[in-house]
Image (tube, rainbow, N blue to C red; front, side):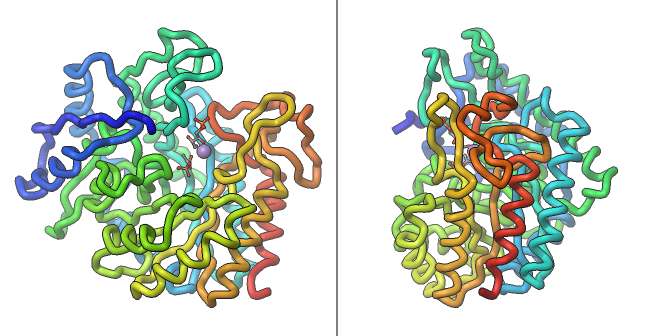
Length: 407
Ligand SMILES: O=C[C@H](O)[C@H](O)COP(=O)(O)O
Ligand SMILES: C=C(OP(=O)(O)O)C(=O)O
Ligand SMILES: [Mn+2]
């Protein structure tokens, strides 16, 4: 188990009414997993205060539009396609990269819309996907592990791995620039999302509901999700997600019991609002057909309409014979097929896909019609964390998934 930290309770948040501040403080009084060991707490406090004074990246109006769209997905009237880099990087977020990822997502959305006969809601893992939870505290070289550009640098140098809170400001600026690129292009209709992992970044981005509602809007992204490694029921991340007016996602791995899934649904969707919660299953191709059905049945029995989304990436990771962290296209496809089969049998809506992909011609995942081999991975392996489908593999998956609707 990775050590948890006790967050510092901020006393500085501008504009939050005292009652709300009390609920945020309660959330942050819980143990928070996967937070960096910042070397200088005073510096974190001043960076957080600086971040809190910066304008939101997304507006409550946009967030409400996504809530309406996800309600349609939950009712079976639309499909959700979410995808992008495992880890965005400051250096890698060029205009070409951002436009390439968005264009790939839009092309896939068109294919899926035709296959499903439904509108597709497009959400990027973009404009903020900078923080990474890790399995181990050190990497293969024995250095403190890379935790995403918002925390430290991937460079294999002990000094570069020291968490630097100023990187949170750089992440905000990079996200703003990415959004500007998205909003000025054909990709303008894509919503943003990232894992709500780094609480020192997420908390300053909260704003009160302009209509006086009890929940807080995150100005950080339209949709935030809680990861597999930080979903401890009594932990800070789940409590944080419960405060949000934004729709929230929750990753559920093969260890999740049906009872736990129902408890998450009750906790994160207390009002039973269709689409408020997206349950993102990442079971692995060998487990999805066994593990997912009782979860879907149990959550459906609570009367809630969640979005069921399949992440066929994170349960299918292995090391290649040539030493690369990779996934095989066939395993990814097999998990997607299993997900569709489960929902067909239960009569529930296979609501969406959650993918790590890029428009770049990288060689990070094996297989696909172009047949990337273990030796071919070295050609262009650029991810700083998990392997992504390249544009060809992503389109191939979209075509195969499009063929699964109504079968
Ligand atoms: O993106 C997901 C996780 O951060 C990632 O799979 C963890 O990778 P690790 O097992 O190499 O730490
Ligand atoms: C960290 C991730 O996944 P998970 O929490 O499912 O392992 C991710 O989506 O990058
Ligand atoms: Mn990942």
